[in-house]
Image 1 (cartoon, rainbow over the protein chains, first blue to last red):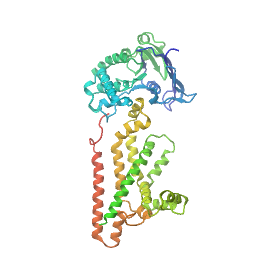
Image 2: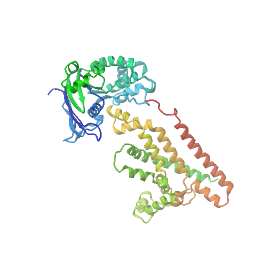
Image 3: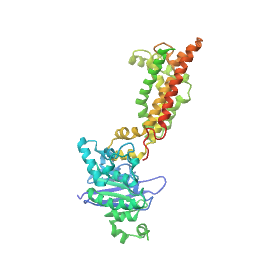
Image 4: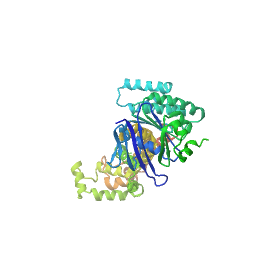
Length: 243
Length: 224
């Protein structure tokens, strides 16, 4: 069987849309999937369910042949056992720890020297080598997201999930980090899912684009292809609003 | 001045605080994170000592743990002496009496920790306990300190429960507040004034310390 991330995530809310998102994404190397859609479509819920931070009401999730969630069989693998990296919208860095300790947080099992080498290597890769002693409060928005990315990558995750990683940034910082993020994700050698509602980001970051509308995935394909040939009028409206 | 009573009070307050840290933190953690539907009942029970007169608490403790009840016999079997008029009994009563003073600040502080930080710890492989120890506790610790100090000060000042459960045995259950009461009863106003003044000074210093560390920028992690 080909390695793939397969999911069918059903989540009902008392208010708001019912989410029923299903897809099967091959895990061929350096594949970045952008989960794209208007706000309120359920993107973050899908991402959190993939991470194990939220338990869907029904459906199933499997990764590389391993069942992460199966409502029918009562299986729910906890986030701490899934080995996924998660980058939160505003970093969610631990405010009481230095940058170095933030990055090392998931490296508990490693010997000290190895941990240090890994932190330094990652810091150099994402460009925070000279910030290791600082506290998160002393960082700019862009620096925080770099630290968050390094922290998520440190334990060697099998899947990297990014929830609107650039939305807390503004203007030039955002554009600069966007281009760099694409290079970083390609070099990271781990499949990634990026949630965004920004077309520019979707185009810049993704190889594959999945369009989520009202809780359902309506179209999946290579980014430029989806933008050029939306499957239906609704997808066209969502991907084409920029005019 | 009754130094023995003062030392006993300090010992009682210290031990009560330690027990409340050990029992109160898990309870507060549960209160801060559980979605149990009947949680409000537990919250109400924890808060009861705030509104009940200490005599009512003492009365029920004696009724339940008196030497002729099954619970009282079990207490005696475990600790080797009956519940009333013992230091152990006093400690148990103090723990209950100061429970809300510890648990409420603990729970508020733990609930104030950004949920996403705990989730981030989970995605980095930390267990629930790991996330509690490495993320929640360090971030909530001004509140934990406040709860611990409040329990200490509250136990130091308790009177009714002590009298109901512990009586007035010098060196065993005679605390400083009871000693002051005795001194006033015996018209020893000078001694009472000295003891009361000392208790006031200790209590004020302890509370001033709590409010000092609660000020913004002191011992608190700023920013996200």
